[in-house]
Length: 108
Image (cartoon, rainbow, N blue to C red; front, side):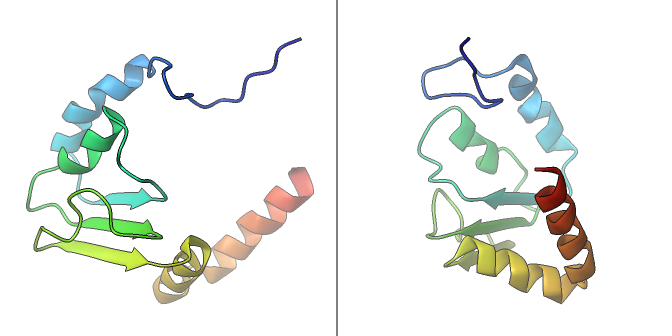
């Protein structure tokens, strides 16, 4: 039979839960965006839906969207995997990341 991954393909309708992002943005303390071009709407609007006083972190190959224009924006460009490792080490979460990676490798 036909197997479809648990993702939304280009041109498909977004799940109903997506449309609550405007309400979720009102309660956000911090926004992290990883690995996107922020070119496809309406998803691309999520990064701008949080208030200006909410810190935003972009981990991406390149700067995209409106990142870098807000005072509290932090941008980590370059290799995403290396950026995640750098952040993980800085936060003291490397053991947790290694455990998650081992579990993923063992359980597929």
